[in-house]
Image (cartoon, rainbow, N blue to C red; front, side, top):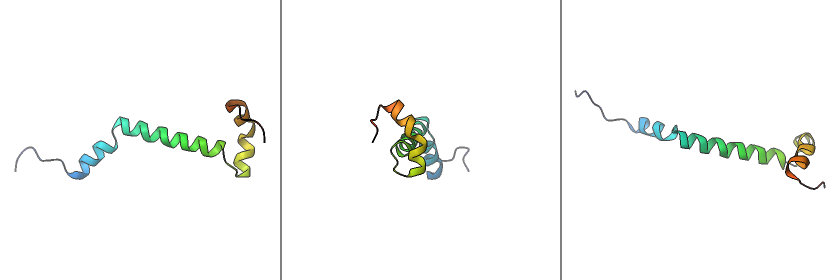
Length: 63
Protein backbone atom coordinates (compact mmCIF):
# COMPACT_ATOMS: atom_id res chain seq x y z
CA UNK A 1 0.00 0.00 0.00
CA UNK A 2 1.12 3.48 -0.70
CA UNK A 3 0.82 6.32 1.75
CA UNK A 4 -1.07 8.42 -0.80
CA UNK A 5 -4.32 7.17 -2.23
CA UNK A 6 -6.21 8.74 -5.07
CA UNK A 7 -9.36 10.58 -4.04
CA UNK A 8 -12.56 8.81 -4.96
CA UNK A 9 -15.10 10.25 -7.35
CA UNK A 10 -17.40 10.95 -4.41
CA UNK A 11 -14.73 13.00 -2.63
CA UNK A 12 -14.03 14.99 -5.81
CA UNK A 13 -17.75 15.63 -6.27
CA UNK A 14 -18.14 16.83 -2.69
CA UNK A 15 -15.20 19.20 -3.07
CA UNK A 16 -16.73 20.79 -6.17
CA UNK A 17 -20.29 20.80 -4.87
CA UNK A 18 -19.44 22.35 -1.53
CA UNK A 19 -17.04 24.99 -2.83
CA UNK A 20 -17.80 28.59 -1.80
CA UNK A 21 -18.73 29.86 -5.29
CA UNK A 22 -21.21 27.01 -5.72
CA UNK A 23 -22.68 27.62 -2.26
CA UNK A 24 -23.05 31.35 -2.89
CA UNK A 25 -24.65 30.76 -6.29
CA UNK A 26 -27.14 28.24 -4.94
CA UNK A 27 -27.99 30.51 -2.01
CA UNK A 28 -28.58 33.50 -4.29
CA UNK A 29 -30.74 31.50 -6.70
CA UNK A 30 -32.83 30.00 -3.91
CA UNK A 31 -33.26 33.38 -2.19
CA UNK A 32 -34.27 35.09 -5.42
CA UNK A 33 -36.72 32.34 -6.30
CA UNK A 34 -38.29 32.46 -2.84
CA UNK A 35 -38.69 36.25 -2.83
CA UNK A 36 -40.05 36.27 -6.40
CA UNK A 37 -42.54 33.52 -5.56
CA UNK A 38 -43.82 35.25 -2.42
CA UNK A 39 -43.99 38.77 -3.88
CA UNK A 40 -45.75 37.77 -7.10
CA UNK A 41 -47.90 34.95 -5.80
CA UNK A 42 -51.59 34.83 -6.59
CA UNK A 43 -52.15 32.51 -3.62
CA UNK A 44 -54.43 34.62 -1.37
CA UNK A 45 -52.61 34.03 1.92
CA UNK A 46 -49.19 34.94 0.49
CA UNK A 47 -50.62 37.79 -1.61
CA UNK A 48 -52.46 39.44 1.27
CA UNK A 49 -49.52 39.13 3.64
CA UNK A 50 -47.02 40.75 1.28
CA UNK A 51 -49.44 43.18 -0.41
CA UNK A 52 -48.36 46.43 1.23
CA UNK A 53 -44.68 45.43 1.36
CA UNK A 54 -44.71 44.71 -2.36
CA UNK A 55 -46.32 48.05 -3.22
CA UNK A 56 -44.00 50.08 -0.97
CA UNK A 57 -40.69 48.40 -1.80
CA UNK A 58 -41.12 47.59 -5.47
CA UNK A 59 -43.23 50.52 -6.56
CA UNK A 60 -45.80 48.19 -8.09
CA UNK A 61 -49.09 49.88 -8.83
CA UNK A 62 -52.16 48.52 -7.09
CA UNK A 63 -54.49 46.25 -9.05
